[in-house]
Length: 316
Length: 316
Image (cartoon, rainbow over all chains, first blue to last red; front, side, top):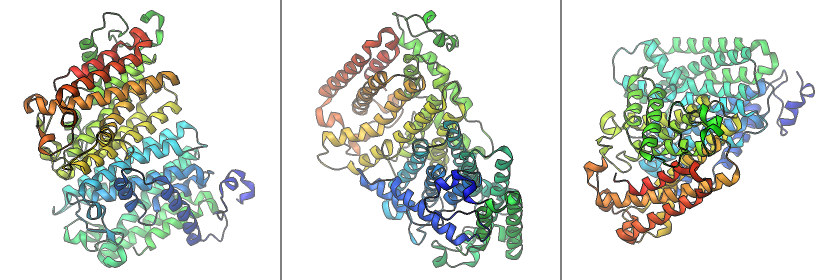
């Protein structure tokens, strides 16, 4: 499909290259979408009194990162015929939620990490009290942002997205995954099903919500939502397997956070269950299956296809 | 207005006494509404795997309390001609949010409280990690609950309520108030305007959201929303003044939490600025002004009027 056939998409383009051509370049796509997301995130939270809490939220929210969740949301919205503008508030909210989970996970009472993305963690910089509140603030603000800033989308759809984001964070999602992760630390003989539960909830739920909310905002039909859901589950698990592999093989400098933490904390990981070569094969298989789900949409699915490959190929 | 003139209200009554008669009995009204809220809260969060986090959320959510925010929400919805059912999911969400703020405020890195409502605080019972996650879970779940469970209300209105709840919690609301509260601890010469900022945000914002969201769910017009807003600001401040007075005058047993904490932590309070008699006069004045705002609605406003009196008369 070329953009002339889809005025809806053209109207949204904001001079960004259309993803719908056969010589699809992921790097350009990622760069362009990431710039849009960075600008929107920067605008989303101003600094007003009491400045410290706004600065603390911005410190972690604007600390870089791949912006994978926002870009997945935008790409899924575009796949379903929607525009970047329709997805952008939800894309920002996803990053706010993700940032909240990182700030709280890094706390001394949780994973007790001192560095994140090459910088001191939020509580090392602002203190534990402010870090807890910065997380709470980002989480609450995420919902407000979606509810207020989403335009050109029927309210019923936006409400579904609010519900989906809630479900992905609560005990049914990343909170539940983190609880089982904490309970499993140092426990011998964690089973594959427990490990899968942890990651399906701790990282998978929000990744799935990223893709599905993007598709929903654009009014994707049930078949597309199902395919997007399966795609997202696969890449979510592949993402975690690669994360576990990188914790063993990459340096702290490259990761921007302390490497080898999993081994040190006696965490069950895919490499500890399968070894590294088999973990790599499993990640690759999941990505292939994810791509197969979307093959029916042809070139329109090129960004999500390329994002799936990007996840297994990444080095940090 | 009698209920026969308002079939909408009658349909919602679920055998509860109508608030719209001249011999309005607050105790009955509170008891009946509280029972509805308790039952809904109990149903709202089931216990499934991983049980610990669901139990931790329920431990604090179902620990009793006045349920003031849910009841204000329901009463405002009824004032505007809405039903209990329309308000109930938002009423539960308000209590989830309030409970989250208590769990996080009690943490060692914040107010470091060991007791709340006569029971060990969440982190004393479940550990700090679970307490942080229980708060996060409740906050996220609140938005999901409103979005999924609210029926018979147009989606546009529900979205406004989601935005309002976000605004009341984020740095623009209770998170911002808590930050200034923490910054002010032990600081000499806190001004009245700083103290007012703290409470307008830390407790006032959510109380105002309780009343306004109830009114909005029922489609209140702008004049009613403005009156509800002023009513809520007044009772919010009165509530805090009474809280400060009780911290000085009541016993820990009566409060269900440690009394005298404010003095010990060198917190600025209204009694420390004004003395107790003047604080009592100010609270009374605020309540009278709150009631005057709603006088135009006659008997229909009886529950909110009586709730305003209840706030200054309470002993815990």
